[in-house]
Image 1 (cartoon, rainbow, N blue to C red):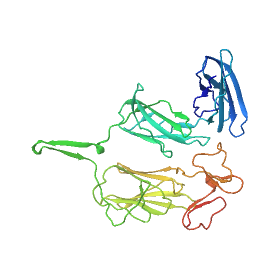
Image 2 (image 1 turned 30 degrees about the horizontal axis):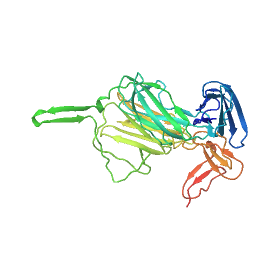
Image 3 (image 1 turned 180 degrees about the vertical axis):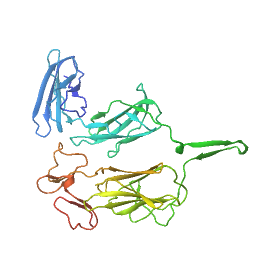
Image 4 (image 1 turned 45 degrees about the vertical axis):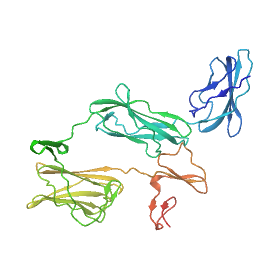
Length: 405
């Protein structure tokens, strides 16, 4: 009598119903039976027979446990109730459904530029890595316009949608497969592209010159050059001005009403941050740390016999926080405003110990260091990370030093 076999079984979520597909070339099937074994112990944990002409068999939700490996066998009964031999064992996995979704689509679902870099959040409670994925763009009728092609970068699951038309509805979608074959799909996510035309400073003007057979192109953008001898480094898209000064004295003129934004990190210090002058208009932005552990920014604008003086609200922030100081002049009245963006920690909690921490307790950016002893956690706010070649002098229990020879 023919022997059935179980078709390849993709990893699935044991907390949901799942249907197994069988293959059979013998007499017409009247019933089928499946047997499932624990891979580690070999114990049979599921033995079920159903009367059906279909070569399918449902594994009910919660029959198995996620994060484990199993073996499955099948047996067919024909219309005379004659049993077939048991099939060969087929291995499969069960995993909790990973989190897989677009993490930076605006709450309004409105994209305000002609390009959009979509970023995905992926997290598997069972440590199942993503293997590959594809981003898709669809029109309002869900007709596919283009896709990213297969991408395998696990660390940066993102894609730049370019050339989006204004006042247009699109659908975004991302599908993927984990390293053991579990399928992922965000579904169709509706977004609307709506943006304003560039302002006059970003426009390009074209003037034909027929007598010369050419077109003259002009814009309101002005390229300004640094005057000085210092060389500068760029770190994470920002220029490093620690112990240095960036100096401009030509190429532009600030007059009438204006807004200036000074943006940076490592601004917890007593110093002059920014100065400008056009011969008749001067201003200086400085910062001062007070004894109560707060910092204020000060704007000083000389005005004849007196000075225009403004202080910001008291601030408390870390050097890693991004600070934006806005200076605005309108109708000879100045405003000073400070915005603080708390740092986005790349490090999280640190787990120490011989056993990998419970996956239910691990958060994004947590780290596990396999050391001796019972596993315990150092919370991110309770330890210091030292990045230096020299051994730190004031480290305490659970601090981490990355450096040395």
